[in-house]
Image (cartoon, rainbow, N blue to C red; front, side, top):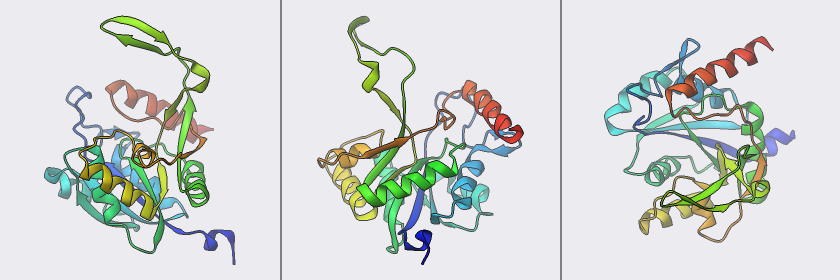
Length: 233
């Protein structure tokens, strides 16, 4: 039996329930990126990945039908589900819908359309071995801690990393961690933080500086440059 067949089946939960509040009136999910919408490119990346057997897309209640239209052409799409009031609630809504046969669940930002096959593969492999994993990149800038407008501390850059997605987990672990966080009213911006609350240390794999999250209009221009560079390389 091949190594791929021995791996646990993995589900991808793509969280696309945000408000695009920093996009200056643009919608980051439906914005065009080299001729295709951001959300379509994100879903397509997981649809292509051999490690992924199903995709759950989480959207705002008022956009369920719209997001479904953008993702309908992908074979691995299982369901489009309603998100919650917070990121944590939305992630929980998605992982709850994953099939029981999926031993690994990846949670990914809908606005990260340039995720690579390597990141998906290595995230699944690391979660299978360690229980929880995330890609991260060393920070490039010097980081300052600031309070009331004044610097209080210069942080040690050598130990600081920027977390990315997909973040991958053994299924029962992330379901339990997110359920506990929601039950206790804890709002998290990062899914690994849910398992960290339970005392677990996620494994870090090498991230990708090209795996950017579309947050501002400027990010779209950067993403287009990265994408064009990949297609001409």
